[in-house]
Amino acid sequence: MTNSAKYEILYFPFQGRAEPIRILLRFLGVAYTERVAVNNLLFTYPIPIPPTNHLRFVKSWPADKPTTPFGQLPVLTETLDDGTTITVAQSRTILRHLARVHGLDGETELEKTLCDQYNECWGTYPIIGSLAIALGIRNLHIVDTVDFETEFLKHIVRPFHEKRSESERAELKSTFFTTILPRFLETQDKHLKKNGDNGHYTTYTDLYAFFWVGRVLFEDATAITPSTAPALWKLYETHKEHPRIKAYQESSEHLPVYPRGV
Image (tube, rainbow, N blue to C red; front, top):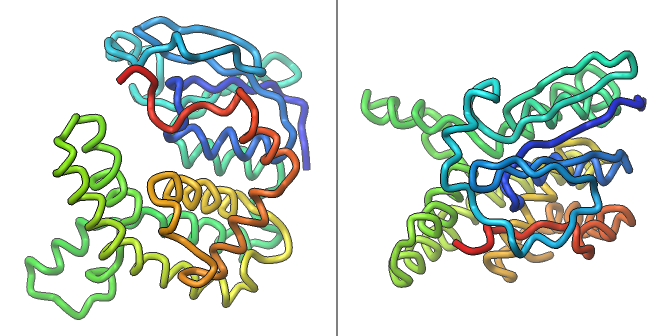
């Protein structure tokens, strides 16, 4: 399923939460343009992206917040053939919207549900586990779950942006890779194996997992291997070699993981 809508992404000049959206569009071969919020100015350019070494991390972003649905990025603007404009906010909502429109959300209702389920498991709801512990309910399975995205942000990303000391960042990073990530990988690999590794066709959940495996490997190239998570590794390698994804990630259009100049 395809359409001829035009897409524009509004985000900052680095990968961040917009990168799974970019990867999905690149996988599909769907053209898009991108507006980059920089120093409170919005630069509009078509893909291919011009050199970005002059772009700086947003320092006065709050001034632009009223122009977005929830004061957050990314935001997707979709222009239909009849000129109707649709604005979609929240990164996972954008991803699911594009997946539905382009047929990457599963073929049956059960598959669609499973896609959502496995996508959501990358970020659970730790407050429930905390509440259960506070109430003395220690036999709830969720108490032992890993909120992957929250833990990754807490241990890897925020210390970088907060300019923590090298020793503190190293300690937090070590905690993530030695105690948190292995538990998450065990659960992910178990479900992937049950599903036949990465299934018989690609869904938006596969591409979301592909992004996160690559993001983890950027921080530690040995963190995920064919022996530590064979099914997840197979999913990653399969999509890494996809012609359009490979071309994108090897091109100058591929934005940096961290903002330049911070």
